[in-house]
Image 1: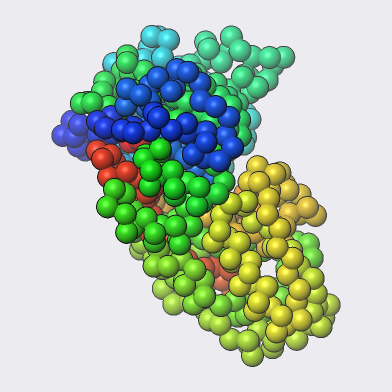
Image 2 (image 1 turned 180 degrees about the horizontal axis):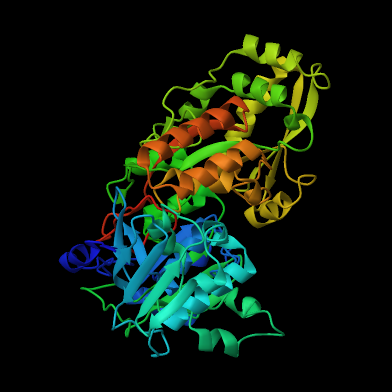
Length: 538
């Protein structure tokens, strides 16, 4: 067995928390509900905490529809999950490093099929009961049974009987096949308190209804307010088993607000401390403000336009290639105002296995030639571009398409839609939008984290698999790549996968953003990590 050296690393660092020092200076006198344009009045408890400078306010365009660790999975959900639950390992820093969390260390066999974790003796759930190996087993088996959310990381490589408790503080995973990124995947195995889940089981639903907006974890924050579509409040657990360092925040609020300019003004005034999903134009304005920090960190998120490969005009590869040649990539980078760099394929250039030379550059002559190859759509067609309400760069992406595709006699209808409503459409190719822009955050810094959920046939119909792509040869290469620990072989397979999906023009491959959440300058301890859901509190 090969023992990791993570224990030594774990003991050499101390957790970093945001300081509450001067967090809400000047905010108490201005109702945040008014500042954010129409949100309901703040609860008295939150307002009192604001006056004391204890609660940080984070405003975002994205709602938090379901935090059940076996169901919900996107950026906002992941951030919440990481604040109320713990995992065996966690990613921190940029570039991201794997750090033991509930575990103190691990052992693995050379073929990456058996993994054994030793749990921290101090680990406790929020009700004071110990985090045991049985809880890890329960959480893993529940995830596999419900088979949603992050189950794609485990379903193909782990059977329910493959996770066992060796003793109360040792858990063993015996994989059905080797899985090279398994340690990365453990950062998404959120551990639930079985007793709490079972106490809230309704008609055999394994606690799903209750866990949509409640938590049964061991994380550092507790939920104290849950108003879907409006605001969510989380209070720091003073008894968190890992402890706290310094003048940490007493809590934080996730406020849903769509308009970028409204969020920018709230950040400028100090009514909020963090503002996410701001337009590049608003970020540019904020860069000039001495009281605001606008990070430009190299990340591994990608921004692409998913094209429905099963239904309508985009089911024709010639149409998809035509759209790829017709798109104005320079205009897209201009929209991003220096907050993005071009990508050549589905991976960010920050990952070593990414393609570096784009196949598609703006060339209307080539676009017309590709469209002419289509037996059904050569003379033009109508198509719908759907984007998330409030995300200005997404709207402008649609506008670029509308302008460019006129030359191909293609009429683009631009439609704004709430994220949750759009996700519901992806499940069926017949309702899935023809064109839909998506920021694909990183579950872990490995090509598998992007390529499997985007292009494996089992992911078709999810938000990352919104293109409905199915290709048996790609499936096989993806399976081979995650099953080998030979890095040279993995690199070769991932190169071939990228070349295949680019040749098939499955998506419009646009850019990787320069990331980090704009925040007030007085914030202390903010550390960017490119792994999805890591911002802003850890």
